[in-house]
Image 1 (cartoon, rainbow, N blue to C red):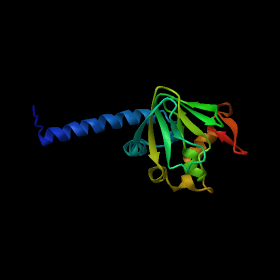
Image 2: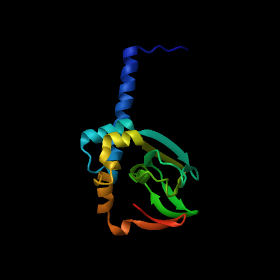
Image 3: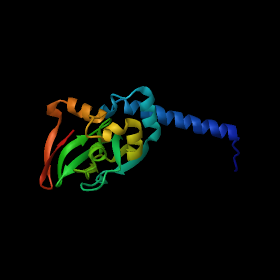
Length: 171
């Protein structure tokens, strides 16, 4: 059996799929505190730039010491941050990690491991992060949107952990 699909119908199918994906991403992004200060147009730009990643339980998303090239946001499932093999933080839908490596240029501070059978993440690469959130994110003189949001977080939601001889706050 051979099926034929008209080019107009094919375009419509692709457009509908892209619309649904964007709608799902926009809904997810509305939960991400890191992006709370962005307007609808900027959120749409972020949604269009996202890439999807799937992981199985126990699989490493990233490892401590690696250079961070993107920020991750949890679409479904759960992940945990581990330092020296100990769970120090959990991430669920709307949670995010990896932004500090993009902002301060330091290597990742923790291993991130999938803790449910299926973990689906979306990521925003460094260039898109910089383009959409602005160069001030990378400036030490001007507080950035993400840094302002992290500073407004309740103190009891942050954890201070040690790693490789240093200390760092996890958002």
